[in-house]
Image (cartoon, rainbow, N blue to C red; front, side):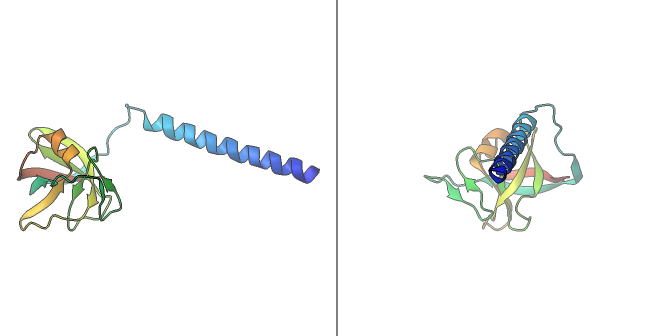
Length: 133
């Protein structure tokens, strides 16, 4: 019996710990007072265009499922997950590399449809971008 009681106490402690971690993650993620990461370095200019629309979500080269609401960019060189700021039409958005591409010569970024809507990018255009720390 003492072994069973100790096992039950250990399981209860583990469940409590997991619950505390989940509560902290949820409350911390919803905090609108958190600051965005600072920008690093100079602005660069690059050609970008919205993704070609697909009928259903697809998994990108970085493992992210790209659907109607997915925010991110594709780039042939920058590593997956790198956070960057994109600026266009007076709007600046923090995003990240979620896919490889584009395959069009001279174009450096493909922008997901959701991100394109957010910044007002409707066709191939020059955007400003820089790294986030």
